[in-house]
Amino acid sequence: MIVLRWLVDFFLRIVQQCAEPFVYFYEYWFYRDPDMPIPAWVEQRRKYLKRSIPAILAVLCVLGIGILGVASSSWVKKRYRERLEGFAEGTQEVQIARLGQRIVSEGSIFGSEERFELACRLSELDSEICSAQSDRLLDYLAPGDSQGFAPAHRLRALAQSKILGQRPVDPGKLESLGWHVQQSLGIEDEALQRMRSDFYLATGKINLATSEISKLANVSPEYWFALAELLLASGDLNLARNALGRAAGAFEKLVSLNPADIEARIRYATALGRLGEFDSAIEIMSNGWKLTPDERFREGLCEIYLMKFQKQRNIQGPIEQQWEHLQSALEWNPKNRLVYDGLSQLCADVRVQAIAPMVRSKIDSLLDAPEFSSELLFAKSNLLLVSKQTGSAIEALEQIVQKDQEFHPAMNNLAWLLIDQATVLPEHFEQAQRIAKRAVELLPSSASYRDTLGLVLFKQGRWTEAIAEFEVSLRSSQNSLPTLEKIAQAYQELGQKELSDQYRSRIEQLRSVSGSAKPK
Image (cartoon, rainbow, N blue to C red; front, top):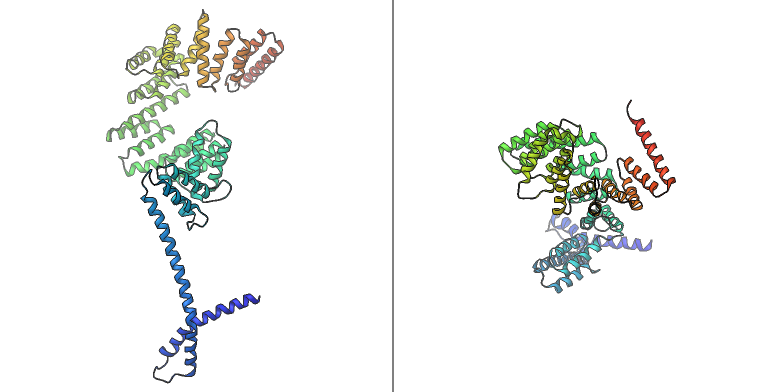
């Protein structure tokens, strides 16, 4: 308490001494007549003035030191930046390394913001030493166990986000990414928000991902499409349609402001197409094509007609209308592989026999092009199968497998057809097993591919191997009855009647459930 009182008295005395000259000036030179004799109290003021000179000098000295320190700090920082900018790419690496050591030293005058800026500048230089110094700075600014500097956490999160595209994702790296995401939540920019939404999707936090994409959509309307896809995947159809409606409204305004805006017009039409307003979407695209014959309109119109085709497929509409929509899509963009995929679906429909000559003629004309298309030839094989031309279908599929080692749908169909013939030779079994295994390798999650491989093994009497494939198929199969029947039969062949009866019991239960679910 005594020390505190002494400090207060000391500072009050300094303030009084600093104020004495101003009091003297005001009371004598400004307020009084200078010709009058100097009174005693003025003489006393003069003494106070002389006594205050050391205090004034001390204050001026402190202020000067402060100003000099700030100026020196700014000058040093400026010099560091100038030296960094003066370094050429790939040269003077030793000087850069020394500079980095000074920046990260404990006594450095640089704060977090300056260190972050310098780290960014170092990362731009094409040098391993510079990159190492930049990483060291970022590790200091964005530690894995404390808050650190938010912009540095942002950079770390964006750099580590590439792991989200890997399969499987390393849990440790995912946890590290989550930490940096958490520490950079206060920053809002497009790249970071997109990365956050991907991270939340990867970790199953659908609500948080939806929130991030919603924020992006309010700024950039193209994100309404991504939000609609996410909501559709989560089963919220009403909110998905609402998001598409918001997208349509936003791009409609842009088109009204600038009718020549190609991108806005295409997105407006796409939103209407996804809402099921196909005719309006086609009209908007066609008007844009008339204004500016841009190739993007051709692609957009092709996609709209594909939407119309898929809508007819979903409701089992007339096969003639489906073919009409596919023809329109082909006219606008004859090289779109999605059109070929739709053509394969159409050709696999037994109703296509009514228009088979027209479809066959169109496919043959497209196949005359110099570029080989696995999708087109696969569509033709489906058409041949529907027309019961199995031999020709096998030839077409063999041609696909020979020229395209990655087209697994043809491999699966060919394996199935080879063992479904009236006379199956040993070489057919060998070929079917080889390509069926290859199809499973290319798409391990496909239940139908597993079923085909299991069937190939089953027909060779390799019961245990067939059961193993069928069991894997059951995990994702949408129609498990045929697979269960094959497993029950395989166990019967192995002499394990108890297991066979268990599977037959499951079959009866499923049949009774499906029978009771049918409308009366």
